[in-house]
Length: 87
Image (cartoon, rainbow, N blue to C red):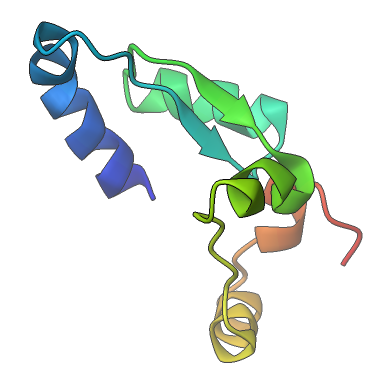
């Protein structure tokens, strides 16, 4: 996700030059979205969509496959913590 966010940041000037406004939505918690903006020097808003309802409404919600969730768990990836999930 960070690589994609950096690519969006790199394209921000062209996006705005075409009269558009870039807004990202993420299932991460608000605190993790703020950290991502800071760490990646993003100059566009990253909105928190806990549970993914907004993304689902636009048909863009991505759900991590169970096998990838297990890989993240084994590698110590804190997916539930980043997304504010219970487990």
